[in-house]
Length: 109
Image 1 (cartoon, rainbow, N blue to C red):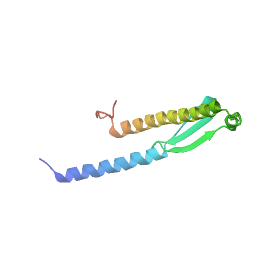
Image 2 (image 1 turned 135 degrees about the vertical axis):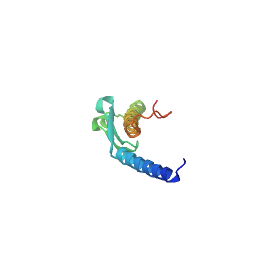
Image 3 (image 1 turned 30 degrees about the vertical axis):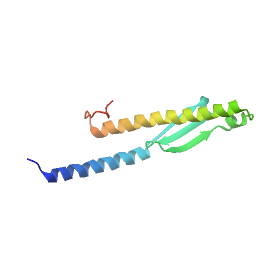
Image 4 (image 1 turned 90 degrees about the horizontal axis):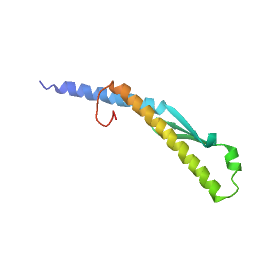
């Protein structure tokens, strides 16, 4: 038989779990580098960029040459994208742990 009280309880638990996941994702930190460490990007589990570090030697090597600037820009993009992939792994892992092995289409791909 349909029990409205159970639905309310389930929704409350789901909200609590969602808040817990968001808190954990905010605390998780991933980092990736490119160009042999010339550029380092640090993101949290929400994919918010926390820090971008550019090795001073990478900047000093810029001679005003447009190709050098474009290479540095590419290294920044590469580091941020790799950190984003690592954040995706953290998100997926958190969701799998939360769902306890439930098979939900789109989340278990």
